[in-house]
Amino acid sequence: MSESVNTGLPENWAQGQIKDLVAIRNGYAFKSKDFNTVDGVPVIRQTNLSSRVVNFNNPKFLPYVFLDEFESYKINKGDVLIGLSGSIGNLSRYTQDEPALQNQRTGLLVEKVPDGIKYVEYYLQLIKKDLLDAAKGVAVQNISSKTIEDWRMPIAPLPQQKHIVAKIEQLFSHIDAGIEALKKAKQLLKQYRQSVLKAAVTGELTKEWREANKDNLEPASQLLERILKERRQKWEEQQLEQFTAKGKMPKDDKWKEKYKPASECDIDYQNAFLSGINLPHGWALCSLDQLSKLITDGDHNPPKRVESGIPHLTARNIVNGELDFTSCTYLTEEGFAQTRNRYDPMPGDVLITCVGTIGRIAIVPENVIFSADRNLAVTRLKVELVLPRYIEFLLNSPGIQNLLLAGSGSTAQPHIYLRQIRALPIPLPTISEQTRIIESVENRTISFNRLLAELEHQLFRADINKQSILASAFSGQLLEESCLSESSASEAHG
Image (cartoon, rainbow, N blue to C red; front, side, top):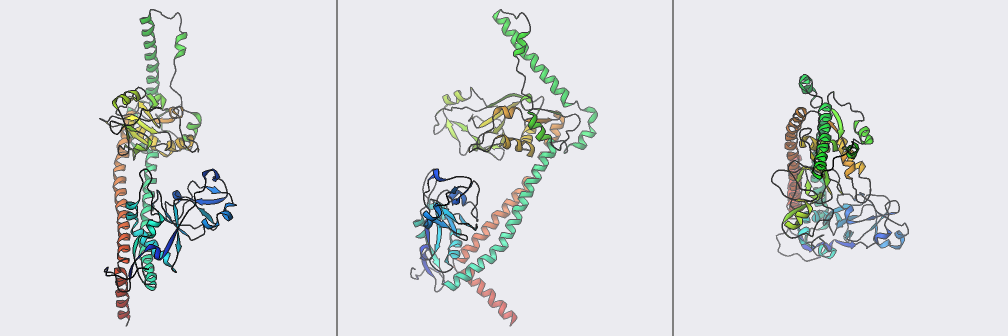
């Protein structure tokens, strides 16, 4: 341990390094060909270190024989790991009864001094941002175990370390209880939003309004029937104009058989969506294709990206219902001219992420220019039948989200096809009722967002409070305050 120096630390403290108390054991570079997703010894990768307890999202396993062959990389219940790549600085405790194996780019804290791990754990939480700043790499940042081991840290005498750890845990327990309550409140808010969307697209939200206006509403089924009939008539007129231009008029009506009507609602989708639901009188059930002028996706072979130019958006650029340009790539004007041959964005188009991340929804706003990748599907609606905002609510509703996720399968790269999107079931009210639905949902959304922002602020403050406690602990101030408090309590009892 380093000797005491004049650092402003309390008496008997030393300015040392993390390696004075713990060592960090690196994992092993197991071969991916040995992984499986069914059975064996769990292998802990850096992706498993996203929470305080090692998570088993997307678990990987190694053959049981590896446990003996790689015994020096065994992880036991209670061990603490730290992320060295991607999840840099994340501390996760392994809580499973059966042992696991440690993969590369993870570190395991090995105790050198009795009870030293807990003390170091809290210090690592304090300096996590500094570790991130010290990390290297472009696509994926990394930090070495040696860099962390060599990190300077204030070291209290062992009895004081235990006292500090106990005090931090006492204070954190109160904050953590508050954080848990805030997280539950956030979850309840999200459930409330989903219930509002469900009520909106099944007619419950506008039940009273519909009853008050029932004598003035044209059934949506009649409007839909008229629009579909007009669509066919328009197609026939266009065909006749082409025959006339060529000077070859048809001898009979067989040419009409070439007309391709819009895709109808998939019966399985329809049954799943309507399970337990009775659509209101006057509503119609149709497919998304029947309401759309166009359903397509972005370019399948986009040109080479450039440093600046026309934004090229993928699924990752649909964030919280909006287009997010912060991490997009770019195309030249010539490249954009190529991609827009397949899809030329227009305001009001509804975008749906259809590859990888399924079911994020956004409406194309006014005055934006972008190119779309193939993992973005788009529907351009017939606004005389349906409003984009209503379709946005519908596609975000629990029933349709479940259909999108179920239809995408469980492959490594989930994918929902355009034919599936075209066949989605759409409960269709009149335009006037859609307008009322939009107003009702947006009014509730304002309140929802206000409450959510307040919860996020409180969670942020809780994190700030924790960092303040840690800073106080490793400057010696928390110990001094604790001793003064205990002394005052003793005098009061005396």
